[in-house]
Length: 209
Image 1 (cartoon, rainbow, N blue to C red):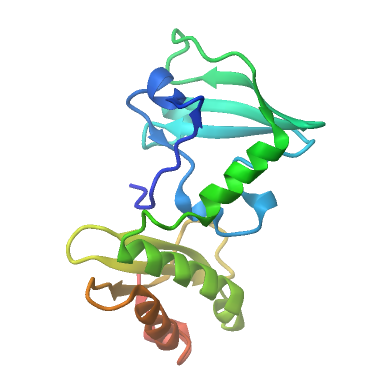
Image 2: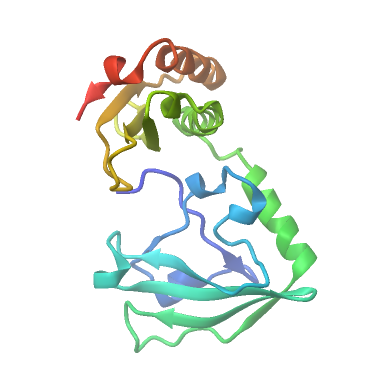
């Protein structure tokens, strides 16, 4: 199950997903907001994009979910062509129009907001960014799959990576399971973990899966 915090869009103060898919899980997670603005899941461009907003903690191809098409039209951002493949009997919203400048500002505010984070979230965020920027795994013919916070006790962060020759996107050959504590600053823990991972060939120091 996704361990990152959910991002649930509020429209005029309403959690629309809770109204049309009350048992669903938001598909947009915090981990998707670490890169440049154009890559954010709710970013709007002139090219329409069909976005999955929620699912049933399963693949929407078999279990259904909520989708919307997002596009930029001049000084407006439009959410249109809503789909509820979870239950087609439930009415979906009409087209929703946003002021583009306000829309972009709100996305930027959400991306920059870290006040909600627990130490495990901060460590996972810092590791995700720093490992991606370092290119460390690529140096050893590997690709980082993902960094996942582990919220159950004992809390920790798991870094999954695979050999480059493997093509399955979410498959992993190795993992670092790193314990996170609440009494040490998250930034210091992340710095120590980066040092551990980049000290040697990760294929030798990580745990094989």
